[in-house]
Length: 421
Image (cartoon, rainbow, N blue to C red):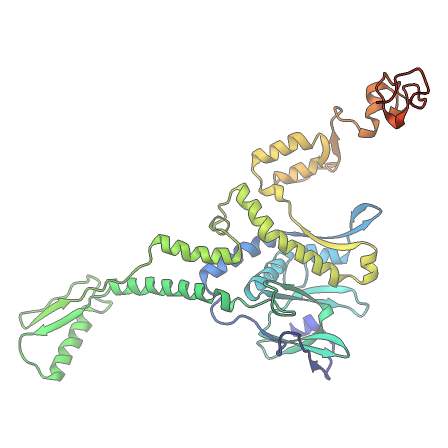
């Protein structure tokens, strides 16, 4: 896989450590421990990543006031298969997952000898270091398998979150989210321990006669083996008159539903999601709020960074862009869709296939045509439509103040018609 991603490229050897303005160490380590292993964290990130992965990447060209979609090899990579290991959905899912896990996400642009992009690879790494070589910024990645690779920063798509104090990196989730994560783990462990404690017989045996220490230990072990093992599925123990068993009640403190909801809400607010989004039980308004606050910023960031790194300055000068868009109408209610079609389709805004796509139906032949209502007219032709003559040729019936002229077109006061204003 290392050879498939990076190929025969030879990294520079005489590199020097890159010096930041506000940090003495240009190192970044990927998240370790159990951050992504926590169920609340993973469900939040999954809710964002699985919806962001539905964004549609498009290679477009803006020219002459028109937006043209370009069908080329780059469009196929973005839309179908960015690399031999993953689909477009998997690619975007992993990019966004890494973005919200590490607050940094790197995509390596694989190119051929002519500089044409042949693959897009999200990089999973253990740590990285920024270095400098001949005045150019490079990233040296260290992988868990022991491999390392140094690539130009211009060959990397770098997405960041919580980009504030650091000069290049997005800040880690560890410090701000650690209290909430610790609280979630403590609650989960407390519930498990409480369940285990309630399922055990606990207490002490009091013997009516004096026993030697070794006999006392033997009697205790025998009682444990007989009644506190998994074989005692009845949960009942028995003693004779030689001993009394006194149970000890273990009343573990449990977090109630309201307290647990507050703890989870802290995690939801940190990631910008709600419980309805996580459970996929959202309304149209809740989806629109989630899209505008979470998905749309991701789409804008993806569009800007992919456009900058995938095209040369000359190509960008010809209007080449990469955009990530979503058909938000697919998530609207049927009532909203019907209202939009009823009012906007007669104006030629939607084509037949646009309407079919809204309702998750397949396109039809010749469905890209637009339907116009004859009740609408071009604004520049409205005068001709109503009076049969252009506006500058219509007779004035009086009260015209155009240019300070009379109705006959003479200067004000110079004719017999009604004077201006």
